[in-house]
Image (tube, rainbow, N blue to C red; front, side):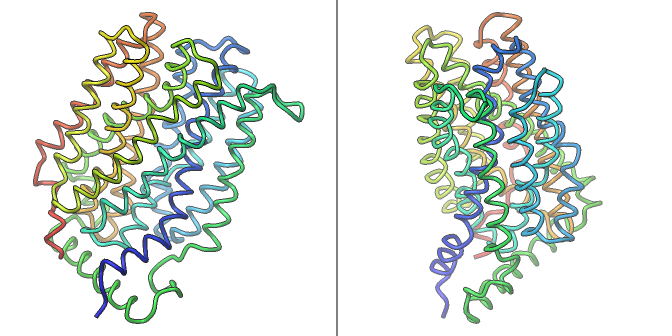
Length: 427
């Protein structure tokens, strides 16, 4: 008899390292603007509002083509489409080194969003083909670890680039864009070569393991198709899905604003570029630990709503506390706790829509949620920049983000059991 624990451990060890590295590359290319801006803003005279617009316009491009991208993925296969996404975004990220004005930066960031559209919900669709609901939070948690891991790696590396003087005729911020775009291209090729599309394509599974896995997935899908939303048309009219999209939007307002502004906030404490890089890595080390612990707890208990909302409430309290904190050390501690709490909540969120989306609703429905949510990736960074120019301080902007996070948690708690199917129901 097949031991399920051993089977899913084997799957994670085979599938997840590739996907985690893909997510690492993705977040490096999203977030390196925060470090490049230290020199780029000074060179071109960009204001905080201009930077906030450039940071956020990425998500407008992402949102516009998110649903079409995921519907194409459902037709051509996740492996090929994820590889296409990675290669094109790596190329565009590297070419961002050659912007010369605010307008050209806007175009580069918008096209980067277009290129990357569909990546995260596409991976969620892919994981649903390999892992049943009871294994989902931990699996998504491992994937989402790529975000903070990327910052642990990229923050010091980006800090070193910015502490240098450039090379090959490129300034330090230009070299940062070029060199950090290359790993995405490499990972796109690795996805094509080593990622199996379905369990039937996995030569590293024996017949008994493959049969057991397919039975578990079939049971999972049958339960979802019986009690959930099975068509994309039905998903579009689902109030649950639309409310989850709004909750995701509010969550990403806080998540991406912290991600993209953290280097500049830390730099405002009076540290050097190199020191800023090392300091920014600290919150993401703790975020990785928080994700693994919190998602394991969610899977063991089968509870989802509070496991999403509670970390957001903690993060909101920490962000709002910066209004009263004068010590840079205490302010950094509060930001570290906030970043860790936000990251801990994110994997659990993705167990909510996948609990009731089945059939063709999965690809389009997840893309719809992420499309709505990614507007928060635009609004959050832009709002912080605009409020910073208006008030001369980051504090009011951080309070605004705190309100967004509290609202996201409240929405999911109000929905409650309408979006949550206990993981133990399928075991």
